[in-house]
Image 1 (cartoon, rainbow, N blue to C red):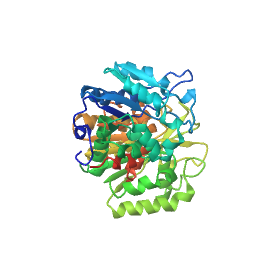
Image 2: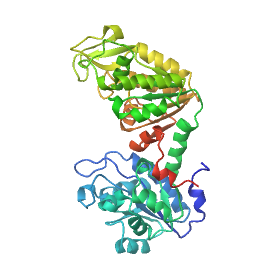
Image 3: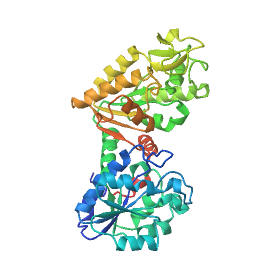
Image 4: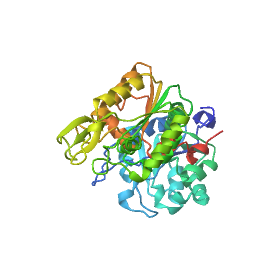
Length: 403
């Protein structure tokens, strides 16, 4: 981690004000109750470390999509009680993120209190990356700490411009995340396998084009596998029984050609689970590719032969990067393939034979459904940032904290 600034680089923090850019954009029900506290809980270690170092901690975050104007629906005031509960310290909420209210609240802070400021996105300047807004934001702070990897792909004021205004560093979560992803893709133990799912090839072109040049084995799954199957000559796949994108066939062939040139083995389904209806426990059967029904059935998962093939290849690998489920994991029994491959990855990880890194919204849900969310080396809750990292793009909120 010598490449980036960490908390150690900030030196003595006794009596200093540390502004912590967290990601408290948590799910909430219609009664403004937080329904999943994972992001709050993962922010707590950095807050506690800063407090242990003698700093007064001021937490800033975005929340929802308020589009530059304040509204109660998107107020971080709803998150303050949960942060207080998770932290075990008094959290004082301030209903603005810049100006005299903030300055006064910082001045009156007690040593064992934490300040939580109002939603950054109540100001348009945040998303515009406005330098003057960033200057105003960090005015009460002596140091800036970034712990919001999930927003690192956005050049927002609080992610980039603010980091240039004060001595700045990664928080513990950001450090952990960048370390894990670097080990997963930038500097992996090989052989390296990637599992990529999703409904459409068109949404993951950058990702696929980057991965075929970096990984040793690439499992293409979900609906996008249908386009690759068709491109590989599986004539039984058509537009009425699958999610094949006919206009992406040539693109899929090009990706396969690039993979071959880079010694990347692409692993596609050899059997599939087809169902009569798109609903849980629908009538279904497993068929080889030659026997996929022309119509009246839909491809919803991959079969046991494909699962066995993926798991055998996985056992040969030392690193796994996973983004996207293998089938329609939200409906039983079409979560079978995702669950079995996830269990194999967890088993190899526990045995010390595999470094397993996964991320993206659907992926996190799918691995939780499989009961392995705590059994991978690292699971990222960042959606867009995780995807852009896998696409090989530089993330503004990470780059700004390079030494």
